Length: 391
Ligand SMILES: Cc1ncc(COP(=O)(O)O)c(C=O)c1O
Image (cartoon, rainbow, N blue to C red; front, side, top):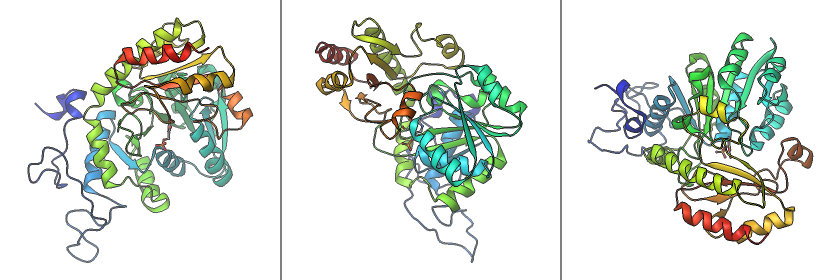
């Protein structure tokens, strides 16, 4: 049986025996190569291929080859954070004067990066569109569009866009189509199969999965884009993923399918509970039939993920008070770890957006985002029940 025949759950447990030193001693897990520099055989030549860790590292090679296989990509470039992966992609693809079309629901940090790096420093322009409406994307993407930037589902409102349709729109205008797939991971969604040219992930989230490592990855089948991203990472940003973080991410990756299945099962139960609760004004979870894009989620995702967002029938002060009553959920930003967290985007994960930007992004004062963990779901439900009873 060759690796091409392996299922996803087998692929996550494997690592390459490609001369990278990963298993020369028969290790069943990849070792951490911490050396920052490697002895050369002759001046300028290292027969083993490694010279300096910012350019290449055996542990990072193992992680990159694993992530590429899982995403169906030819290349993976592991970066120091999801933000570094996004910055590397923008710097590799864009030139001054270029035009970007982006989903207006993207993660606030990406929006900030677009304003500071893409617009202010690079001199490109960004037009934000409601990409839940494919026609709006088709209208916005023109022959001077260099980059189409999507995220699906979005953080924190769990809005989706039609990846296949937008892939066709971008291809027709020769624009590079990038999808931030952080919420789904390759286990639940593989945008390259829907026409994306590049996929980015914050591996800080589900891919590492244990809230103990920062990282990001850029995945592509395009050799020229890969070469440009690799160059930017090594020589302009210097934002490579450290060997120790590569090891942690490889360790987390082994249980990705198990964790995602449990995150999803728990999230679905919590979303159903919230949908029936009298003080909850609106629940957002793509797995619920009441989600306006449930059919699209079913068509392009293999699972609906572990994030639930909801709005309370309450003021900002009341909403904050509810969050402080929670015991099993931890009040913290981020997502994707085994533990359930709770976030008040208006004052936490999206606090650095201006009031106008938050309003435009649909982030209200009573919005709550919960990355549902893998704990006993009855405990999570009971915890929410007691906290909401205070309203
Ligand atoms: C969808 C999405 N993309 C990118 C990022 C940035 O990742 P990092 O915090 O690893 O830089 C985040 C972080 O929350 C995110 O939610």
